[in-house]
Length: 288
Image (tube, rainbow, N blue to C red):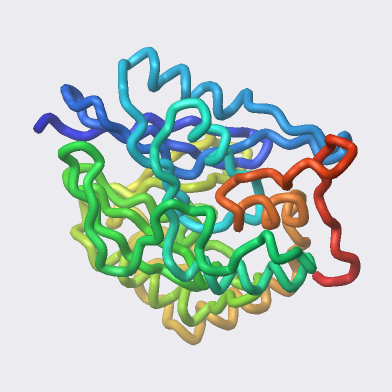
């Protein structure tokens, strides 16, 4: 098998990287962490970002096998359901999504049509699972802390898609103040990632670059251990937890958290149309 490849697509509105992962000479591919565009002032969705993934897959004559989420995102809507309608494939996420579904079904006061057993995701990965993207082997890592359901995906001979755990070294780490988040767990999750060989490539889910550089989608374990402003070598768990807890207390909620989570716990499926033919999102008051 030829060396696997991850094509990165950056959405500047949500600072999110989506990926198409494939190996030359192998038709099967996976999408990781797709974005459905959403304009909150007009409550309008569009598929410009997701269409770029579709165009790339078609241009390279690939077959979409997997639509993978690292977790239920709070900063953008997933395009998983739309992508599946266009190209097929199975939508997958970590099995702890059931905890997140239960939490946010309560917060949004969603009806019985919203399940908390992992539906409508097609596949629920557990820690230690191994699966294939074509001929590529992928190991599933449970990396809680940002949320209880965060997973990372180690694609052999390519690298690890870390989700919202680490950011680039000059940005640091993900927040831990969402329901079920835990800074101690995030520290342990990051140590798990940094236990891989120094030359292991880590693929980011987000980048929030300072003014002196452009967005970058990857770095190495060595770069994180040497330079991460929150989690480099020599920073203790107690120091990290104190910093992360104090910092989180100053942060605003993500701009798209309220529209995002009710869609993302449903694998990117928008609410069913009501009797007037229109879809509606719910906005819970005073819950965050």
